[in-house]
Every structure is written in structure tokens, then in C-alpha cells.
Picture (cartoon, one colour):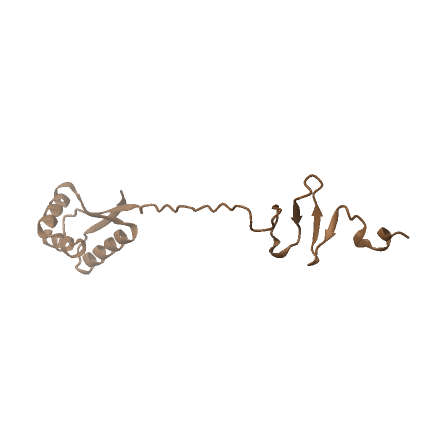
Length: 150
């Protein structure tokens, strides 16, 4: 019986060798100086004759782009029952308008049927519409406040 038949680990010595740590490496017959570590420490592949960690690495940095939020117009709608003073009070209280701006917006609502109170992000616009509607209902006025995407 020959040595190759008695030891199954040495069946094909030209194709694989066992390293000191027990890992099997396969020889590349096309490039004998390069060894591919199949089960080495950390699962790293070594294609450099100097060993792992000597190659170059490419680090890519992703640039995050933030989108501007969608903006919404908050509008007051005209009705025949809500007093003009109440509308001016709403504009001053909830939209922080001075008296002149509030008076101008109130006249737009009265003459055109609609007036823009401000432009806000969705959450802010929704909150303002809810606050105005609750305040109008509390004082028993049919004032309508809506928002639309700009």
C-alpha cells in the first residue's frame, strides 16, 4: 500500500494543503504565487503575496439629500354670519398677524370669498385649521378654515 492510499488527507497533494491552523488552502495552478484562503481567520480573502491587509480599499461616502417638506396654504372661507371683528381676532391670535395685515386678509375673505392666512408645513397647517375651527365652534360661528397644497 502506498502513502497516498493510507492517508486520506494526502490524496491529492497538488490540489490542497493544510496550514498550521488547520485551514485548507487550494493552490491556483494558473498563478502559483497567489493563494486563496478558503477558511482563514475572519473569512478574509488574501490575493496578495504579502498577506491580508496590504491591498487598497475603496471607501464610498453616500451624500444624503433631504427634501423640503410640502407646503400648505391655510385659507379662511367667507360666510354671511361670522362677524368681521371675530375674523380679525382669529387672524391676530392664531396666525400672529398685526392688525393691518389681519384687516387686509379679512377684507379679502369678505370680497373674494377666500383669504390666505399663511403657508405652513402639513403638521403646522393642520394644527392651525383645527384650532381655528374649534375656536369658531366654541363661539358658535360657522367660520370655515381649510388647507390646500401649494
